Every structure is written in C-alpha cells, then in structure tokens.
Length: 352
Image (cartoon, rainbow, N blue to C red; front, side):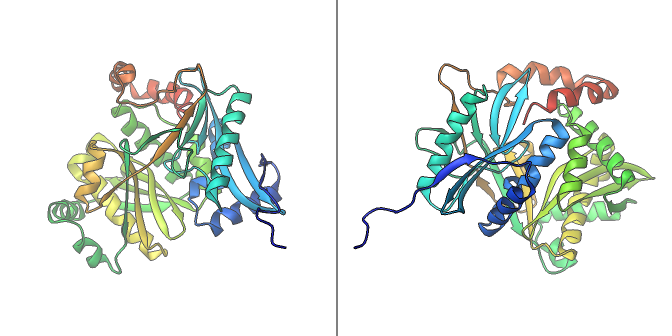
C-alpha cells in the first residue's frame, strides 16, 4: 500500500570542504539550483585563503543525493566577535534547498553549530529562514538590469542626466586596461585602498582579492589618466551576470568622471565576453551609492537578510551607520593612507 509519510528523511552533516569530491558535488548542486557565486565552495575557500576565516557548511542528503546546502564562513574578530556568516564577505548567500522544511532544518542545525563553535549567532545574506529569526528587508537593496546588444544601445538606456556624465567621461583623456596580472592587481589595490579609506572603512587584505581572482571567473578593469590609475574595479562573472564587486576611485576620479567611464566600459566589456546582465551589487537603502545606481537606471530590489543570535549573547554590530561606529569612521578618514593600509586589513578581515 502507499505509505502516508516519506520513507526516507533528510540527514544533515557538516560538509568536508577539504575534500575535492565533496566540493565538486556541492558546486554542481549550486549550479543546478541557480545559486549565487557566493554560495559556491570556491567562494568560501577563497575567503578562507584571503582572510583566514574558515570555510564551513552544512549539507542535507536523502538517499545519497544532496537536498540542501548552507554555505558558511566562521568569522572571528577581536573587535566584532564571532559569527557564522552565509556567506563571508558576500552580499548574497543563505540556504539552497529542494524543500522548505529542509531549509528550516539546515538553519536549526546552524544554530547548534554556531553554539558548538562559540559563535554569537548566524547571519544569512539571503535565502529562506525560520519565522522566529530576525529578518530585515529595509537595510539593503540590490540592483540588476539586462545588458543591451550594442554600445550605442547601452548608452541609450542610461537616463539622460547620467548619460550626459558618461559622454563627458568619454571625452576625457582616459585609458582603459583589463586583466588579472600583477600590474592590474597592484593598480586595483592602490585605488581601492585609497577609496575605502576616504569613506572611513578599513581596506580588506590584498590576499582576498588575489584569492578571488585565482578561484573565480573574475578580472580587473582600471581607468588611468596620464598613466596613473584613478579608478579600478574587480568584477566577478557568474551565470551570465557581471558583478562589479570591489571598485573605487581616487579624489582625482570625480573631476575626470573616471567612475562613470569605468562602469560604462565594464558594461561593454561584459557583453562582449558573453554576459547578459549587469549586477550592480547591493547598497544601503537611501545611501549615496543607492541613488548613484538609481541614476544609472537601475531599479532597487529590497534584499532580505536574516540572523539568529544565541541566547544571552549581544547581537553582532558591524553597521557603519550605527552610533557605536560613527566616531571610529570619522577617525579612520583622517588616517594617513600608509597607516590605514597597514592596519586596515587586520581589522577588515573580521568584518565578514
């Protein structure tokens, strides 16, 4: 007779990301389910290699087949505490599962796993979560749009005011280079480090960028003026989309409109190499970056971030807009660049 309940249930275990076959199975599962680059074991391992924050994860299986996957990095910081993040240094992440109940099981297992690892809690950058977790949809928005079929068509879909800025940028004497070699990496890090210092943020370790470039489909586009790098972006390519992930410009970039040129050139370059979507990443809702992306014609889509905090533990706070960190940010903006580059990576590797 037909059984009124499943004959088999999901079994959960910790993933062994040191084993190549395990990683290949999970990579195939993520690709099959249309997952994000940040849910791939390759991303977790790159974060571990570049920052020392350990790659971990939980898998669900039934009859020997994967039915769910929760990618995790164990983030430790003497300033910001310990947490299991899905995924570390990512704007997306969270659970992939065949069934809603499997997703909940993985989240419950992550609660226990966090306690075992002496972490304050779990942070999911997307995906399903149990109803009793803290879920925010008002903190960040994502921005994705289709790429056009030609250069002029791409320029034409940019709203009028921003299109005028791009045209001015195109008239400036700027040189574009794209690559992944030592010169590209050095130029990118110099520009990015100065850019985030000016925003009051510690720079990530250069090893993180190197690890991402080596493990993923990624490249660097740099804009130079008189041979000097003024804007640069490290972009990741995944499932038909290009994501300008780590980018910035120097003080000189604004007058030269180098950032406008950089993103327009990246749109053209990405289309030529086969991308059909431009993923402008996330920005804090109503921030300057949020309105910058809207000016390009991108529509904001609220992102859902979920978190669980262990009983009796204070929730981790890495929000740069919080009162707790505002004085630190103001101080960081005044640091000499050489000093911020020396101590910034030691702090930033714990942001996760």
